[in-house]
Image (cartoon, rainbow, N blue to C red; front, side):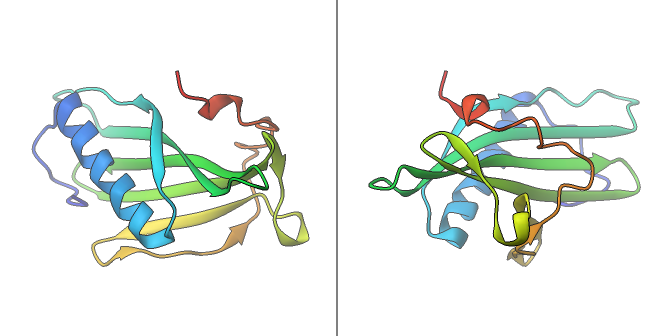
Length: 140
C-alpha cells in the first residue's frame, strides 16, 4: 500500500484501501470508527501525486457524549514516497475538547508495521483550528 510506484488506482480501489485502514485503526485504538464522508478519486495518468481521505467518527464514551473524529489519508508522490496517517480530534457533546497542555489532536502515522501513536500534538499549520464543533463529521 505504501509503494511510491503503485499502479494507478480507481476511486473504488481507494475506498477499499481506506476502508481497510479504518478497520485496522479501529482494531488499533479499540474504538469502532465509522466513515462519514469520502474524498477519493481515480488516479490520473501523468499526475505527480494522489491523495485520498476518509472522515471517521467513533464513540469514546456514550454516557459522557465523548466522541473522536478525524481523517485517515493516504498520499502518494509518484516515484518518490507514499505515506498514510490519521489526525483525531476529541469532542464532548459536539464541542471540541483540547488535550493536555491545550494540544490540538492525536497524530497516528501508519507504516507497513501498522499504526502507531505520536500522542497529542500541536496544530502547527492551523488546519484544525476552525473545527470547534463536530459538524464536519456528522453522517450525511
